[in-house]
Image (cartoon, rainbow, N blue to C red):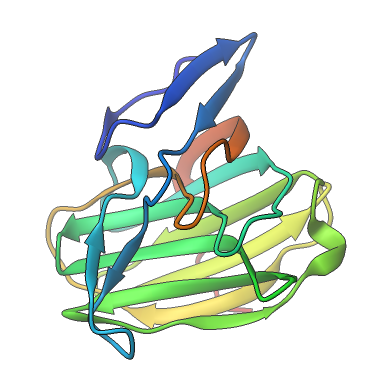
Length: 187
């Protein structure tokens, strides 16, 4: 498989293993803007390629989430102040499924998904002119709605992402990336 795109920030290590892409995050990498914590972090690792309105991106991955704020999934980015990251994040001893939407400032929506740790996770984001619809599934099961969020119109890029805000050696095995038509319905 060819993994298209350019790295937003170079990871610590990238290795092609068959069709898989195994990526190790730099310790301290993250993506967040202002809200609640007061800081701006723009060091997430994302392999970005163009994503047009009317398209959807799916990313499949496996990881062992054990470090505080380990995270992986997909990112859609218009610029440093307008982006979305969606997938799994380990926080306070629990694996969570959720999304951060940043339109000048970041927000965070999340829900427990502890039984997903170490399993094949698929995150799907469908782009409309003014929104992104995020769905996720585990082990090829049914997709569940994660978030419907506002987003900016215009050029944007998307692809698999990971961060390791509190530790070194967090690796994610990205299994597939697919580009196709956006979902026509919300339900």
